[in-house]
Length: 265
Image 1: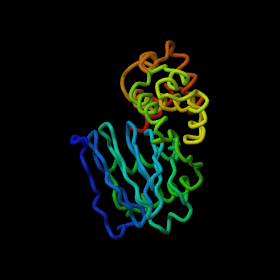
Image 2 (image 1 turned 135 degrees about the vertical axis):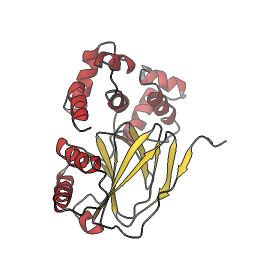
Image 3 (image 1 turned 60 degrees about the vertical axis):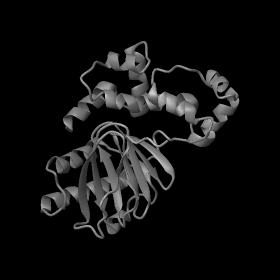
Image 4 (image 1 turned 135 degrees about the horizontal axis):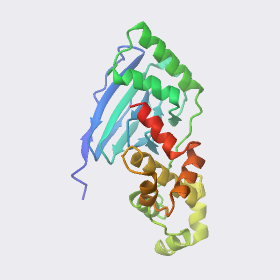
């Protein structure tokens, strides 16, 4: 039976943008599904906290708040959020889209990108009208075009052997079940599972599990709890192990990430 607690949302689709860059704001309650739709312009999807799950032309993407999802014009997309989300869509005209990626991807929000977006969104900017805002949007578009995108930070799969593993690791980050133990649970072999992880997700089981923990930690770091407590909630026995993993994947420490997040609030 379908989950009747899931809320359905269909955005109102304008025929054209009032300005070449236009901001939309939404507050989504937990368990909201945004139904499939497309636009005649590109969109940069941004959240303030948590994780956004999006599917773009059957490509599933999981995006933490330190990244944005880019969808080019006329690409059918839908989204789902497990927790409450403050969401912003930056709509970009087809003329300005020419320098941006041709396929859906994730774009890291550098300190400069975050600062520009924060300046505009903190004033609830919608249409870009003033000369100052036009300058900011010009820099924003140019920096987006120069930022190296990634296809997907935490790729997903509906493969019958991988799906139960992925769902469990997302629900319980402290789960330490080895790949060999998972093989027994899903009636397969460790070698077969390892092959499917590489084929379907383009990474190893351990790397995917680390990335899932990182995505979860980015949500926890927005809460007033210690680094050691976060490490414990993610299944680490020592805070230093969590810090090492976080820095390996992001280039900064959890504390540095937390300070950057607070500075852009």
